[in-house]
Image (cartoon, rainbow, N blue to C red; front, side, top):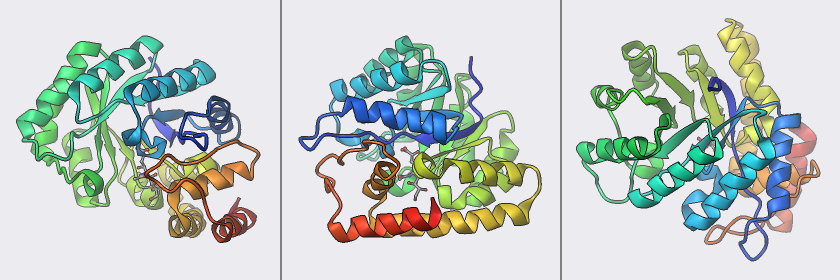
Length: 292
Ligand code: HMN
């Protein structure tokens, strides 16, 4: 069973212009993360993977290709969450059979599910797959907020090992670490990695690690070693880069930065805008020259 601590890239997916998965490009992104970014693992099928716009078969294809390329070199987490619980179970079984080290599932969204319904959702996937599970909490996109006591109820299922915490609520983060010290927390906002690391998170899962993974590790490890001022300097540079990326279009700009590294990162999947304008490409080039 692989260690799940450390730096995990939320894997980007390369798409062809017609929206199909670009297998060669996807393999290159996996390799870039392993060989150049030196990540501890990959989070496959997350928001960054444009997952919620894909069919079940496409999601499976991506799980298969990522695992086939990474083999057992690093830890792999499969995000299988969906408002369609049957799909989540099917994907969870598939990823588990492929050998993914752990599953993760976004809290079911769109409808206002009750907490017992959310708990049932997780327990159903776990029972069907037997795999470990990380709750993917991203309230700013899902509208779903889970409190300290509710996490305790979820953690009654010993297969739920922690939470991917994509929120800026550091009070909740601190309360969770204090209340459940044996459960893991992965920071989900790359621009807030330092405060999360100071509060004792066990790892981080982020989109920008696909291109800025080395600095991300430095921030994380320096914070753990108590070198806060040095970590802050690196967070400042990181956030200059992230500010530039967010202002220019998040996933397309990271893809452009990968292309500038020779990685065939492809297009985004519609209804997202498929490609950058010439002006945006010029901004990406500036970011690359300045920060990478
Ligand atoms: C995923 O599910 O793909 C990632 O774990 C999501 C990750 O938390 C990213 N969040 C989103 O893209 C919504 C962050 O890395 C984020 O992109 C970054 O901090 C810039 O805001």
